[in-house]
Amino acid sequence: MTQQTTQIPVSSIILDEAIYPRKGIDHRRVAIFAENIRDGIAFDPIEVEPCPDKPGFYRLLDGAHRWSAYKSTGVEEVKVIIKDLDGNDPLLYAAEKAIGPKQLTEEEAKDTARRAYAGNTCLRSADIGKAIGRSRQAVDAYIADLRAVNQMGRDIKIFCMHRLGIPQDRIAKRLGLDQKTIHYHLGKMPILANSLNADLSRGFTVAQVAQKHGWPDPMVWSLALEGKTDHDRFKALGWGFCTWDKWEWNDCDNRFGDDWPGRIPAQMIAHILRYFSKPDDLILDPMAGGGVTSDACLAMGRRCWAFDMKDRPDTRPEIEPFTWDVSSAQSRLWPVSAKEKPDLILFDPPYFDKKAADYDKKSISGLSKKAYLDFLEAFFILLKQNVKKKTRLAFINADWRDFQNTPAIEEKHKGGILIDDYLDILKRTGWYHTHIIQAPLSSQRFSPVVVSAMQKKGILGVISRYVIVLDQNN
Ligand SMILES: C[S@@+](CC[C@H](N)C(=O)[O-])C[C@H]1O[C@@H](n2cnc3c(N)ncnc32)[C@H](O)[C@@H]1O
Image 1 (tube, rainbow, N blue to C red):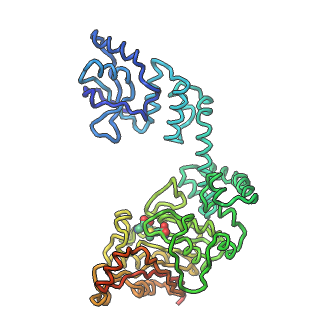
Image 2 (image 1 turned 120 degrees about the horizontal axis):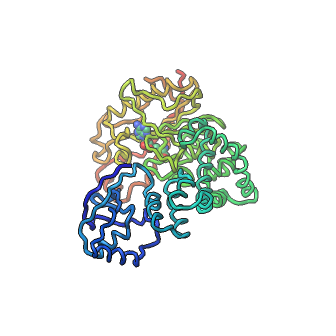
Image 3 (image 1 turned 180 degrees about the vertical axis):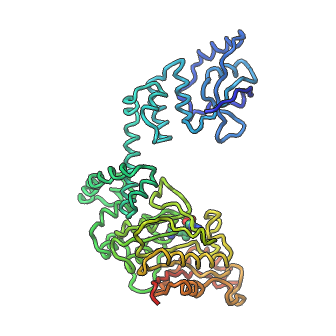
């Protein structure tokens, strides 16, 4: 921890309640200090740190009563120590300072302990206790319920990742735990699942059980449908099964996947899984976005390794962070060194030029047309080099034409990227299609005003989207 003593305006100091351990200021104490100031008695400098979200301001770490007294006596500048806490918890630091002159009340100690733990669940009871002037056991009692919820959250994460077939070393790395801890938690899983299974067998719905136990819906579905056939899973989930090669849905099933730019319906993933994979197969989703593939895999009893450049460790620990960069031979990295290879790759990249503003700057959606196609070519080669001979690829993409600006009669050959462009690249890189399934986007996303303008100008819109399924046999 470093510090620097200097003179700053009293008006640049604030009392931030988030890091203040007491219930309020003791006005009698302030009045005595004000009296002392008027009598010319000098105080120790108060301690502050720069405000994280208010440049030019400082928040109090120690000396709230002295600061209030300075304000009430009209002092304009005071001597302060500006602290750099080097990542130490400011609330606990402030508490440790506060208990010097006067212990915290029971209510203040409990509240401070809970706030500190909620802000950082890695804090140890003994360290919190030392700061607030209480024993480790007292802190354990203050935070017991918070710790139980956190433990449950961690258990669910471990259970989910394990169920998706993510190896223990990767679960440990992702959750910042050691492998022994993961192993210990996995041992508790059957007991954890028992109480949910009991509620399911009593006739509670999946949604009710999920809500009661605080589990995500897809995890409860994975328990509820254990041992069922794909056919029965579809029935239980209320998904009709498309017999022909045209799959159409107006809406995404909101029980699976997050609201995400370019989200695809879980029903589409489930159809791909049902037609082109077997129970317990390993599915790879290299650009997993809102997590619809991993959720659908839980419901369909498949394992899934998912990656995305967007890291969301709290809500989507099963999507491991990874940015595919195929711009040079050296950076053609594969995210994991596991021996096991996927049975099916489910690849739903950002479509060319679409939603570029919604994704990260490094996303491939912002590339030029040539760079986008070059990326796909290099990526398909990379996939081939890292999977089994028998691995299939399901590539989801849409036709792209500049239809918003151009009447159909003025459009030129090769003015866009159409399905044959993808098929050419795929063939060149050793992927041969066995099926082309039409899975059009809903035309309902166009407003009546836009449709009417398109009709007037002779513009032919695009809703074509395809699931191209490929293997590696020529
Ligand atoms: C169309 S979205 C996937 C949507 C997903 N199937 C769903 O329904 O939620 C494409 C994803 O690719 C990711 N992405 C784009 N470029 C990437 C790159 N170079 N490496 C890793 N992820 C990338 C984006 O962050 C985005 O989440």
